[in-house]
Picture 1 (spheres, rainbow, N blue to C red):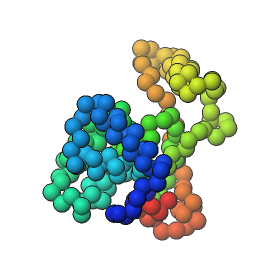
Picture 2: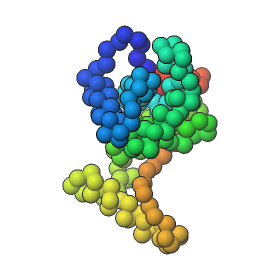
Picture 3: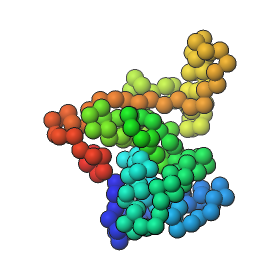
Picture 4: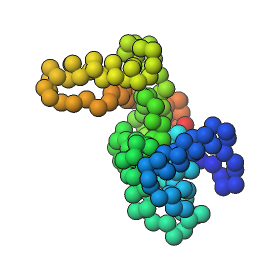
Length: 182
Protein backbone atom coordinates (compact mmCIF):
# COMPACT_ATOMS: atom_id res chain seq x y z
CA UNK A 1 0.00 0.00 0.00
CA UNK A 2 2.24 2.74 -1.22
CA UNK A 3 1.02 6.31 -1.16
CA UNK A 4 2.32 8.85 -3.58
CA UNK A 5 4.00 11.93 -2.14
CA UNK A 6 1.55 14.65 -1.30
CA UNK A 7 -1.40 12.26 -1.02
CA UNK A 8 -3.12 12.72 2.32
CA UNK A 9 -3.60 9.78 4.59
CA UNK A 10 -7.09 8.39 5.17
CA UNK A 11 -8.55 8.70 8.68
CA UNK A 12 -7.72 5.03 9.42
CA UNK A 13 -4.16 5.57 8.15
CA UNK A 14 -3.83 8.69 10.28
CA UNK A 15 -4.97 6.70 13.32
CA UNK A 16 -2.41 3.97 12.55
CA UNK A 17 0.35 6.55 12.22
CA UNK A 18 -0.74 8.33 15.41
CA UNK A 19 -0.81 5.02 17.34
CA UNK A 20 2.68 4.07 16.20
CA UNK A 21 4.08 7.55 16.89
CA UNK A 22 2.58 7.46 20.39
CA UNK A 23 4.27 4.08 20.87
CA UNK A 24 7.61 5.50 19.71
CA UNK A 25 7.31 8.32 22.25
CA UNK A 26 6.19 5.93 25.02
CA UNK A 27 9.17 3.68 24.29
CA UNK A 28 11.47 6.67 24.75
CA UNK A 29 12.80 6.51 21.20
CA UNK A 30 14.03 9.78 19.74
CA UNK A 31 11.74 10.93 16.93
CA UNK A 32 14.19 12.00 14.22
CA UNK A 33 13.00 13.07 10.77
CA UNK A 34 14.18 9.70 9.41
CA UNK A 35 12.30 7.73 12.07
CA UNK A 36 9.21 9.84 11.49
CA UNK A 37 9.31 9.07 7.75
CA UNK A 38 9.87 5.35 8.37
CA UNK A 39 7.02 5.16 10.90
CA UNK A 40 4.66 7.02 8.58
CA UNK A 41 5.45 4.68 5.70
CA UNK A 42 5.35 1.46 7.73
CA UNK A 43 2.23 2.25 9.76
CA UNK A 44 -0.01 2.29 6.68
CA UNK A 45 1.70 -0.47 4.69
CA UNK A 46 -0.26 -3.72 4.71
CA UNK A 47 2.19 -5.49 2.39
CA UNK A 48 4.66 -6.43 5.15
CA UNK A 49 7.56 -4.59 3.50
CA UNK A 50 11.24 -5.44 3.80
CA UNK A 51 13.75 -2.90 5.09
CA UNK A 52 15.08 -2.61 1.53
CA UNK A 53 11.62 -1.80 0.13
CA UNK A 54 11.08 0.93 2.71
CA UNK A 55 14.57 2.30 2.06
CA UNK A 56 13.93 2.48 -1.71
CA UNK A 57 10.57 4.22 -1.22
CA UNK A 58 11.99 6.82 1.17
CA UNK A 59 15.29 7.48 -0.60
CA UNK A 60 13.89 9.99 -3.16
CA UNK A 61 12.59 12.24 -0.36
CA UNK A 62 15.51 11.57 2.01
CA UNK A 63 18.59 11.04 -0.18
CA UNK A 64 21.05 11.23 2.73
CA UNK A 65 19.32 8.48 4.72
CA UNK A 66 21.26 5.21 4.86
CA UNK A 67 19.92 1.67 4.66
CA UNK A 68 21.39 1.11 8.15
CA UNK A 69 19.12 3.87 9.49
CA UNK A 70 16.05 2.13 8.08
CA UNK A 71 17.13 -1.28 9.34
CA UNK A 72 18.10 -0.01 12.80
CA UNK A 73 14.84 1.92 13.12
CA UNK A 74 12.81 -1.16 12.19
CA UNK A 75 14.82 -3.17 14.72
CA UNK A 76 14.10 -0.55 17.41
CA UNK A 77 10.39 -0.51 16.53
CA UNK A 78 10.28 -4.30 16.70
CA UNK A 79 12.15 -4.37 20.04
CA UNK A 80 9.65 -1.83 21.40
CA UNK A 81 6.73 -4.02 20.32
CA UNK A 82 5.51 -1.55 17.71
CA UNK A 83 5.91 -3.84 14.72
CA UNK A 84 6.75 -7.50 14.21
CA UNK A 85 9.82 -8.75 12.36
CA UNK A 86 8.68 -11.74 10.30
CA UNK A 87 10.43 -14.49 8.37
CA UNK A 88 7.51 -15.80 6.34
CA UNK A 89 9.14 -16.69 3.06
CA UNK A 90 12.62 -17.00 1.59
CA UNK A 91 14.54 -13.76 1.35
CA UNK A 92 14.65 -10.72 3.55
CA UNK A 93 12.63 -10.42 6.71
CA UNK A 94 9.42 -8.45 6.56
CA UNK A 95 7.95 -5.98 9.01
CA UNK A 96 4.32 -5.97 10.08
CA UNK A 97 2.81 -2.93 11.81
CA UNK A 98 -0.32 -4.89 12.77
CA UNK A 99 0.26 -5.93 16.37
CA UNK A 100 -3.22 -7.38 16.86
CA UNK A 101 -3.38 -11.20 16.86
CA UNK A 102 -3.74 -12.41 13.28
CA UNK A 103 -2.51 -14.98 10.80
CA UNK A 104 -0.73 -14.59 7.48
CA UNK A 105 -1.45 -15.63 3.92
CA UNK A 106 1.77 -16.12 1.92
CA UNK A 107 1.80 -16.59 -1.86
CA UNK A 108 4.29 -19.31 -2.81
CA UNK A 109 4.82 -17.79 -6.24
CA UNK A 110 5.15 -14.00 -5.88
CA UNK A 111 5.84 -13.80 -2.16
CA UNK A 112 2.96 -11.45 -1.30
CA UNK A 113 1.93 -11.49 2.34
CA UNK A 114 -1.49 -10.50 3.64
CA UNK A 115 -3.04 -10.48 7.09
CA UNK A 116 -5.89 -12.80 7.94
CA UNK A 117 -7.74 -10.90 10.70
CA UNK A 118 -9.55 -13.90 12.13
CA UNK A 119 -9.11 -17.58 11.55
CA UNK A 120 -11.60 -19.28 9.25
CA UNK A 121 -13.85 -21.92 10.81
CA UNK A 122 -11.87 -24.99 11.64
CA UNK A 123 -8.65 -23.04 12.27
CA UNK A 124 -9.95 -20.93 15.13
CA UNK A 125 -9.23 -22.10 18.64
CA UNK A 126 -11.91 -21.82 21.29
CA UNK A 127 -12.90 -18.16 21.79
CA UNK A 128 -13.32 -16.32 25.06
CA UNK A 129 -14.86 -12.93 25.78
CA UNK A 130 -11.86 -10.67 25.24
CA UNK A 131 -8.83 -10.80 22.97
CA UNK A 132 -6.24 -11.09 25.76
CA UNK A 133 -8.10 -13.97 27.38
CA UNK A 134 -8.41 -15.68 24.02
CA UNK A 135 -4.67 -15.29 23.36
CA UNK A 136 -3.79 -16.64 26.79
CA UNK A 137 -6.17 -19.59 26.33
CA UNK A 138 -4.63 -20.47 22.96
CA UNK A 139 -1.08 -20.19 24.30
CA UNK A 140 -2.02 -22.36 27.29
CA UNK A 141 -3.60 -25.04 25.08
CA UNK A 142 -0.61 -25.11 22.74
CA UNK A 143 1.85 -25.08 25.65
CA UNK A 144 0.31 -28.31 26.96
CA UNK A 145 0.95 -30.03 23.62
CA UNK A 146 4.43 -28.52 23.30
CA UNK A 147 5.35 -29.76 26.81
CA UNK A 148 4.80 -33.34 25.60
CA UNK A 149 7.41 -32.89 22.88
CA UNK A 150 9.74 -30.32 24.46
CA UNK A 151 9.39 -30.08 28.25
CA UNK A 152 10.33 -26.66 29.54
CA UNK A 153 9.79 -24.86 26.21
CA UNK A 154 8.05 -21.58 26.95
CA UNK A 155 5.43 -20.60 24.36
CA UNK A 156 5.32 -16.83 23.76
CA UNK A 157 2.78 -16.62 20.95
CA UNK A 158 0.88 -18.78 18.49
CA UNK A 159 0.46 -17.86 14.84
CA UNK A 160 -0.54 -19.62 11.66
CA UNK A 161 0.89 -19.18 8.19
CA UNK A 162 -1.33 -20.25 5.32
CA UNK A 163 0.64 -20.83 2.13
CA UNK A 164 -0.77 -21.04 -1.36
CA UNK A 165 -1.33 -18.83 -4.38
CA UNK A 166 -2.80 -15.33 -4.38
CA UNK A 167 -5.63 -14.67 -6.84
CA UNK A 168 -3.31 -13.21 -9.52
CA UNK A 169 -0.88 -16.12 -9.37
CA UNK A 170 -3.67 -18.70 -9.26
CA UNK A 171 -5.11 -17.10 -12.40
CA UNK A 172 -1.75 -17.50 -14.15
CA UNK A 173 -0.64 -13.88 -14.03
CA UNK A 174 3.13 -13.43 -14.26
CA UNK A 175 4.82 -13.07 -10.85
CA UNK A 176 4.75 -9.45 -9.70
CA UNK A 177 6.44 -7.48 -6.97
CA UNK A 178 4.22 -7.14 -3.93
CA UNK A 179 3.90 -3.35 -3.97
CA UNK A 180 0.21 -2.69 -4.47
CA UNK A 181 -0.26 -5.61 -6.85
CA UNK A 182 -2.02 -7.96 -4.40
